[in-house]
Length: 259
Image 1: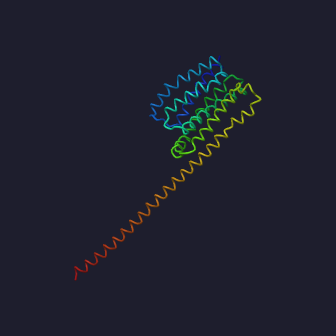
Image 2: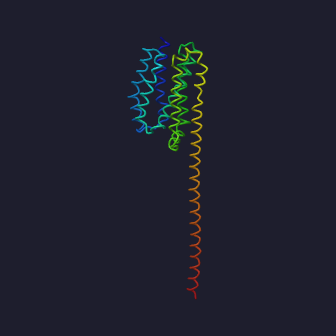
Image 3: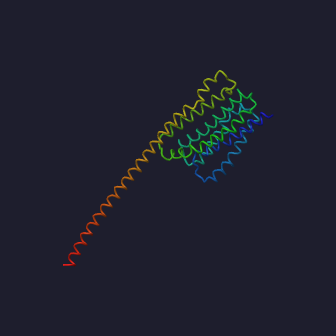
């Protein structure tokens, strides 16, 4: 009974924080207040339905249905809400979902192999890891990522395709033909897939794009500053010529007055 309760509460906790993580990274077409209200109204029934399915059908069967019962509805909802379209949106969605799925997988494996399947380690791990990841995303990733979305126009479709393929592969290996913990012979290959090398490559490329954009911005500001300085120097030289001519006129007029 306690095990089932902890598992169901942890699932609700995960679904809630997946929404928070995604909202930290994507850009809504609506105000923050409207976005939060619509998210609560539309995604709360989805979360409750998945918890009910977990209770009625079990973890293994719901793991196979989760893609249909949660991922696709949230994908459609956030696509309608998002300011970005196509590759930008899909990549952001896959990043948020994959990071959350990593936490779910790691805590599941930790509880299965070290916690005796009692869901205590799983619950505690998720209770700690999700807020930590969200804090890091808010403090370190959100602003650079939004800047990146504004600055980089091309390449998002291929990044989104890579992220979606990796996400689908991770779900497939986790749940098909059965849950990964019942297939110990596949664990080595699964751990290799679990390693975030795909995202390391993508973010490395995106980071270089961001650095290149910042370098272009700095060069543009430097050119503008140089043009401003040149204009100031030219104005100063013009003022000096006027002052010189004015002094010459004053000297000439003074000479005429006293002759």
